[in-house]
Image (cartoon, rainbow, N blue to C red):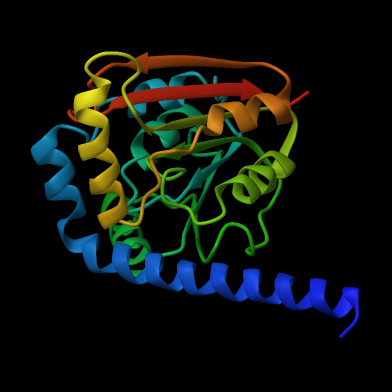
Length: 229
């Protein structure tokens, strides 16, 4: 076997592994779809921080915004208040169960300008958008760097992106809480070691960031946002 064939084999293995991982995650989040909203309400995260994540996008009436890993559609009301009836929300999720709940929400609330896409964001064709928001998702998307690349590519020039998620606690008492947080992440198909704000800075050149220590109880919550040149 020559070097090219060896490289191709390794690449095929990586692709197969990523797809298998994606299938596992899709199944996991689909099973959680019924309990997702009540669970977030219980811990106070069904609305908290989301308005900040949407606010930094500076959305305008008539714009199109991408809702990454939209889950049950908890961002819809925040986004549609900004873009109005002439605007559009393109919502994507890998978990059919979550997207079914998002569809139910859109129909129940009369959201006619929400487009739902089922699939892995690294593989699904994304239309051009003015902005994108990703809440509680970069910690769990299998190939999150490629996902960020695809999101940024979908942005029109001057488009904005915001990422809201959990991170380890810097400094004391992170040494106490972080091991527990990392263990919980491993059990729930999440990776606490990721730093998407670093990747965004490499892609966009400048990224702003805000952090709420202990915002996730056992972790911090961060909001990172930037603008495509």
